[in-house]
Image: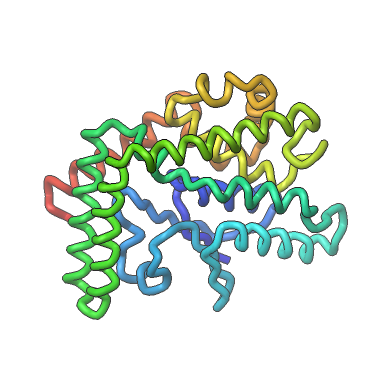
Length: 267
């Protein structure tokens, strides 16, 4: 089984947490969306959406995050012979969909310093144009992605888009805060795949230095966050890249790659 993913990708984090929590072995392939690796022709032919993660088991390829996680759950149940593992409850699945309904894209991009955002956007457009030249048969599909890149830049200038994204996030966090007043975890007294879905959302707020405003202002959520960060899966999937000084090392490495490739015009 292969997973195409990257530590920067929130959905990739969700899937990797599920794999670690369910002890499912897999082969890892990093596909950095900031440097445009998801536009490489081999990956693009397999997945024209360019979104990650992508999970492959033989000829079976899954692109949808929740479908991947539920597939992982079924694999774990079969591997264990059903011992100590039961299918996720309806409450867990409802929370999974509720969390997945929030798209972090515009919220995240709106909190990145403008000079870095402009540079990365320009670099990505040049990557797409370079791939169009390499694979003429995919030129029309790449052109659609180039158009999407320009549309994203335009939407970031629309305050209404950013307002709706933040309001959706606040509503979700408020609902989580209310639930955590009743239970230790999101769907009861045991850690579940609902928590797997939520942890990367909270980690994104941490990376953006927004913990105080969005997490610590909600006492139940703050306690929960401190608790789930102690899980081995969190430390392996998220903590090693983004806890403390690690976040700066991770981000600096990608930034240097962008600068060097841009100077050398290696798109």
